[in-house]
Every structure is written in C-alpha cells, then in structure tokens.
Image (cartoon, rainbow, N blue to C red):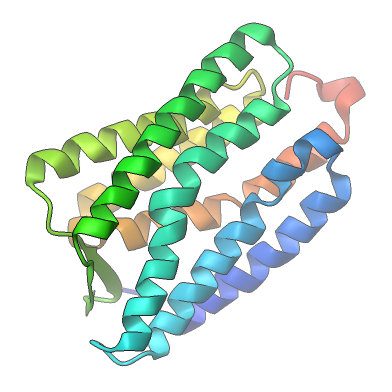
Amino acid sequence: MCFSVAASFVVSGSLGVAGVASLGLAKKSERMMALVPILFGIQQAIEGLQWLAPHPSLDSQVLGYAYLFFAFLLWPTYIPAAAYALETNQKHKKLLSWMFRLGLFVSTGLLVTLIMYKPVISLSAGHFVYAVPVSPLALVLGTIVYSIAVVGSLLISSRRSLQFFGIFILAAEITAATIFPSGFVSVWCFFAAVSSALVYLCFYLWSKRSRLSSW
C-alpha cells in the first residue's frame, strides 16, 4: 500500500494550507468548521511521527493515545458542534443538537474504553492497527453509533456542500471497512483527512453566497 511517513506528512502539510485558507474566508460562526482541515492535519502529523517511532515503545504508545484522542474523543463531538454552529435552519439545528448529544455519548464511551483497555499499536501491510480488546458486538455497535454522530451531522445539515462532504466521509468509511478491516481506524481517518480538503471548497462556495446560498 502507498501509506507511508511521506504520505502522512504531505497530507498534513496540505491540510494545514487548506485550513488556513478556509479560516481566511470564514465568518465567526464558521471558524469551527474551518479548523477541521487543520485538526486533521495535526492528526496526520502525529501518525507521521508514529511511522518514525520504534514498535513497541513508549514513544509509540504516547503517539497512539494522541492519535486516538482525535479519532475517539474529538471527532464525535467536534463535527456535530461545527455543523450546529453553521446551521441557520431551526429544524436542522434542533436535530444537530441531538447529534451533538449522541457524539458526546460516543466520546464518553470511548474514553472509558481507553481507560479500561490499553490499545495495542502495530504496523501491518502499510497501515497502522490501533487494536482495543473489546467484543466484536461492541465494536460493530460502537462504529455504527459513531458514524451516525459524525456522518449523520453532515448529512443533516441544510447546506448541500456539507452534505457532499458527509457522503465522501461515508464512502471513506465503507472503503476502509471493506478493504482494510484490520487498519480501519487508521485508514478511515486518513481518507477522511484527505476528504476534509473539501472544506476549503465549501468556504469558497459560501464566499459566493449571493449566488449559491443553498450551498
């Protein structure tokens, strides 16, 4: 596979540029969403450092927890909150408030999981495996609820550009789960990070609000 230390750092740097450009176009209520590429860029930089760390080692474990902070704790609440901050339609805003609550529930559950079980980090076939020893049923149910909170928040948005972003994230999830099941967390986050570059396109379209207000 093509995933490598170079891929992680190239994606990280590119997302940093996209995030800064998005912030330059963002209004105050839009800044949370504008930060998404930058945050994904930081996460990919952490995985870039993971490539350079010996396995197993204390450095690898610390980097693993830092990476999983984003994957397990940040994204389930941050994405619904960012979509909520952007929303102007009251019906959609109410639904997004419930998505935020669901995301908070997911993040809390994953935090408890990380406290109870030490993740095992390994490199396999060109991607990292972040293995947490939970039951298969808990893994499947957790993934479904996580997806509803993150992807659902984007699909519920009244802005079509965010809906398309959600479709890309969902496609990334399905691809990662189907082709790279052992490295699902790492691969999905990588694909989602690449997809987050679309956030800049969203802000470009929103800068043309008079003609593209529905986007």
